[in-house]
Length: 102
Image (cartoon, rainbow, N blue to C red; front, side, top):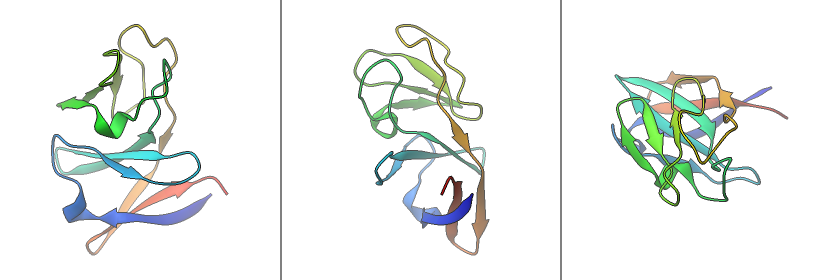
């Protein structure tokens, strides 16, 4: 695993997602002043979860409305049936880092 600088804390607003662009994009969120990173692609269809609707610690896919827990990656509703991966985060100064596979 490798700590990768994803963004600054000011790039992620409560109730919004931020996409870390890479071959397999990562969605970052802040919930109750904690930062979370999950796979950005909905497991039902190829939609960005960073572009989804956020309420509390749940993100809803904008295309077909599957829901995922931001903290755990757990799938919460159909049409998705598979959870998304989660990644550890840390904040150093104003920077958010994500622990990503090599």
